[in-house]
Amino acid sequence: MTVSRRRLLAVGLGALAVAGCAPRPEPLPEETPVPDPTTPTPSTQSPTPSPSSTPTPEDQARLDQLLRDAAWANEVDRAEELIDDGADVNAKDDTEQSAYLIATSEGHLELLRLCLANDAEVDDKDSWNGTGLIRAAERGHHLVVGELLQAGIDRDHVNRIGYQAIHEAVWLGRDSTTYHDTVRALVAGGVTLDQPSGVEQLTPLQMAEQHGFDGTAAILSAALKTKAPSDPDAALLEAAEAGDADRVAVALRAGADLETRNGRSRTPLLLAAAADQLAVARLLLSLGADVNAIDDQSDTPVLVTGVTGSAEMLELMLAHRPNFKLYNRFGGTALIPASERGHVDFVRFAVGVGIDINHVNDLGWTALLEAVILGDGGTRHQQIVEILLEHGADREIGDRSGVTALQHARNSGQRRIVELLES
Image 1 (tube, rainbow, N blue to C red):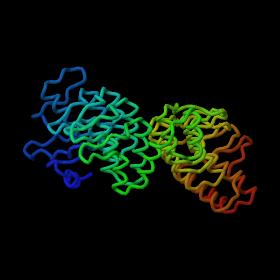
Image 2 (image 1 turned 45 degrees about the vertical axis):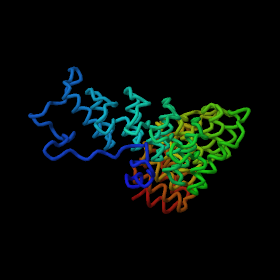
Image 3 (image 1 turned 180 degrees about the horizontal axis):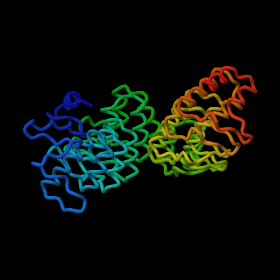
Image 4 (image 1 turned 60 degrees about the vertical axis):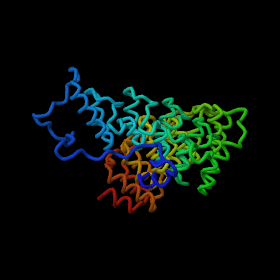
């Protein structure tokens, strides 16, 4: 959201009309530059205090400024070092920006998690008396919104121009996927939906209708008009599998357990992943659904993506600490069934996310072996073999009988794959 747009929206206020976040402060004049955290500190400046020493007020101020600089740049490793050295995630500059508040407005999820783990004041306010939730909602950062809701932030705080987070997500947002995800997260998180804004005296639904945001209006209308289910857990499971993200939000709002399970011990996220329901998965993940939840046949939300071949679904999981050491009922990774089934785009994406490309499953097969043994030798499997080889697949690994992928390809007459394996 640019400052100019906020000024246009500030009718009758004579100031910016958004409580989300003040603009990033201008750099200090050249005669007093902010020290570059990547260069040695000149001897004329105070060195960064060691963790064991008590910093002077000047040293503390310098540490805190360096942390804010790292926050603006989303340098998470650098921020962690500075926090270890004593920098305060809640320390503000003269524009009321702190590392924590910067993380919320800029959508820096890992930085936010770092701040929350280091005593961030969750309900701290910016220069507009707005919370991090308001800042994140204005920008459409649905994962940050979900993280803050999980942290117990005040869901309905009103900033000094009369907006709650839900107002800012609608009035200052767009009718786009990222804002739909944000509004659903707020709905599921239990925010008040019928409070008029302080300026326009419009409810969030009225705001959406006035802007012509049909998608956002449909989400809010469903939340307001759908009767709370008598069995929220059952409603959540059904809606997740069916791909109805609005009903998922209503069920969660009614108190459904995010990790409830069906008769096969499948969670809502696992059901959504198996049915490739991306909107549902985005909502569940934003509120903390477990990507490593195991069902009764050793599948997880991550593992089933290899069966469906949904690179988009796997990509959603990556921000939520997937455990690639969990294996399916055949002792395999998601990459192995994807290679067998000819999911080229999935394999192309999955080879770069940290899955062991040479993992051997309980049948004695790697992804490369499975692509040859169970593949048809056609264009898709040729592409997969080429991708696997380019990313370090070991062609010398044999099956339980010691037969390599090359020998299998020769035996089955897969001439192009033979060429690839011999090259």
